[in-house]
Structures are given as structure tokens and as C-alpha cells.
Image (cartoon, rainbow, N blue to C red):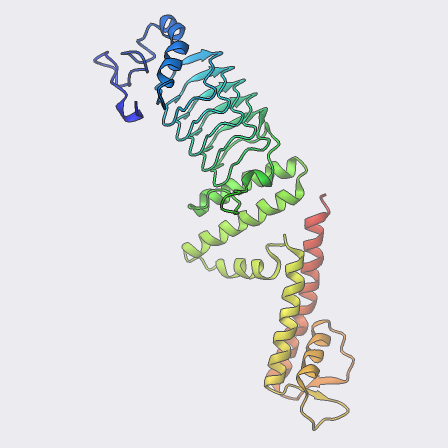
Length: 340
């Protein structure tokens, strides 16, 4: 039975689809008889292979779906309490608007599951596969994500207040060796990373929060580029020089790149002049040395730019960038590590 084969409710005025093993929807079925027969019917149907159930809007509890292949099933707007889905295959299952209390999804296959606007209370997704899951506007209250895989999931506007054991490694895919949320839509990914960043910081996971913050601003830069927003340029430069103040080592590498770049330009145009040998052309090593003392504003006096306007302007530009990069490095270190 595939989800597209769900029959229409026998009530002529009802637009809903009939529940599995019934000819009516939840509003028109004999609920007591349906729930009493449901466990045995599910086990019988599942014994012959995968089964797609339609349990839309069903209110039930203490059902055991463990180990069953329920791909493509619909539990939309259902209210499930203390149900077991341990090791079940729930790929592409519709759980939109559902309310789940005390349900156990340990080790379940939940790739591409849709939990949009669902409320989960005291549930466990430990070691479950939630890759590409839709968790849009979902509410998590005391929900365990220990060891769960959430690579390319969508967390837009989700409430992660009660999420437990949620870390950066939950978003790492061991198969593709990548990590992160779904980034197909830059704005959605930007908001999702922001939600995740706040949660990780609140839990004291500052290293993981730094990763989420960097991805958040990377998605913002992607959006600025796609919309041809001029703010893309400063965003690009901020990433290039400091990784959005989340990568201190990048500031050091950027500073060295600036020093060697100016040193090469000085050598190319013969900018510096030695005070001891004013007529001699400075070597490449001399130019790099002059660039370094200019960048650090040391100014020993043994080299100076020749009396050409744009030579002096070039040296002043590098001299200005040195303290700026030093300040940026200190700020990056403070931002990255002080909170921890």
C-alpha cells in the first residue's frame, strides 16, 4: 500500500482519506473498535513487507511499531503517546502537526521525515537517522538527540529549548564526510543556523556554537551574493581576513599574506630606499623586511619609501592595515574564547 493509494473516506461530504484497515477517516470511524484491532492488523500486514499506513489525526498510545518498514506512512496531526518505533523505517513519513509524548525512536530510520509544526515531549531520537528531516517550527521538550544524525536537516524557526545532547557532530555525515544543515535556501539556512547557534551557546558548547555562527554568516553572504547586494563585499572581506571573527588563525595568515603582497609590490616598483645605500636597488628580502616593519609600525629608519607620492600612499595604506589586523586578532580571540 503506497500513500497515494489511500482511499477516500466513505462519508460523501468528508474530504479526508480513510484510515488504514478502515473505510472511514478518524472523524467517522468507530474509534474503539479500530484501535483495538489496529496492533494485530499492523503486524499481520507488515509480515509480508513494507506497509504505508494512514493514521492521520489518530489519537492512540502504547503501540509498538518497532522494526517495521513504514516508509511513506502518514501520522499527520496524530496524537501518539508512549509508542515504540525502535529500529523502524520511517523514511519520508508525514508527521506534520503531530503531538508525540514519550515516544521512542531509538535507532530508527527517519531520513526525509516531515516533523513540521510538530510537538515532541519526552521523546528519544538516540542514534536515529534524521538526515534531511524537516523540523520547521517543531517544538522539542526533553527530547534526546544523543548520537542522532541530522545532516542537511531544516531547523527553521524550531524551538530547541528542550533538545538534549545536540552537538555539532550530530550534523556530520559519515558517508559524504560533510557537515551542516540543508543549505539549498540561503535565508532558511541562515535562520536555521542562528537557531542552532543560540541553542549551542546556551548549553555552553562554545566551540560548536562558533561553527554554527560561521555557517550562519556564510549563508548570509550567499544570500547577499544571490541578490546582488553591495554588502556582499564587506561580508566577503570579513570572511577572508578573519572567518567572521570565528577563526583567529585566519587573521594571522591574512596578515602574513598582506606583508608578502606589499613586499612583492615594493620590490616590483622599487619603492623602498636604504638610508645607508640610497642609490642601490632593494632586494626582495629587503622589500619584505620593509613591508614587515611598515605593517607593524616599527619603523627602524633603515628603510623608507622614496619621495614619490603614491609610494608614500602605498606605505601609509599598509601601515594603517597593521594595527587594524592586530586589533581584529585580539577581538577574534576575545570573542572566540572569553565566553568559554
